[in-house]
Image (cartoon, rainbow over all chains, first blue to last red; front, side, top):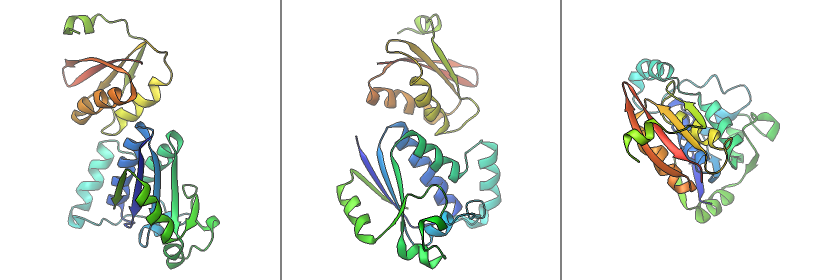
Amino acid sequence: MAKLCIGLFSGSLDKLTATGVVLSGAAADDMDVEVFVLLQGARAFIKGNENKIDNLAEATHLKEEFMNSLEKLNVSTWYDFFSMAKEMTNVKVHICSLAGKIWGGEKLDDFNDLVDDLCGIGEYLTAAEQADIHMFI
Amino acid sequence: MTQEDLQTLQVDRTVDARGTACPGPLLEAKKAIGTISSGEIMEVLSADEGTKRDVPKWAGKKGHEYLGTVEESGYFKIYLKKG
């Protein structure tokens, strides 16, 4: 089974959605996935923040067009993409402990249900070294 | 298979994924194929261009047989035989 490793640095709606689409493809393919959530990304995973994320990283001036299109095309929310992928294949979501702290998350309980554990940077690099595919988003 | 063969196939499971864009149809196909038995036929209805190439490739990787695609007006039907 192919292994996919994602470094999710961005906590913006567009990049979270992109990550969700990639996760869905990985789920269809039964891949083993490890997502390492870094710096800005961790903010989205703090409990209760999942619906508060509304900024874009790219083409920010086209936000309205982007949001309207997602709705029209019936695209899942980033949270639902993650949730679905976790149901369908082996997806582990690790929060970098420094990133968590930056946004006020010290313990696993401070994060939403998508999160499996908190980890250090060494684990991320080891996973990236062992993966067949590595993405940094 | 010819278009005529495909049109007259006895289908065991139909997945209507016309309401979703990529990656919706692929996910729905993946979920549905788990509900049929080896040798049974599944058709996937989609209007998403990406799906037209994704589903046959995915099927090949997973050991299912891609039988062909039939174009309808505004959507298409992809036929697979579960491996």
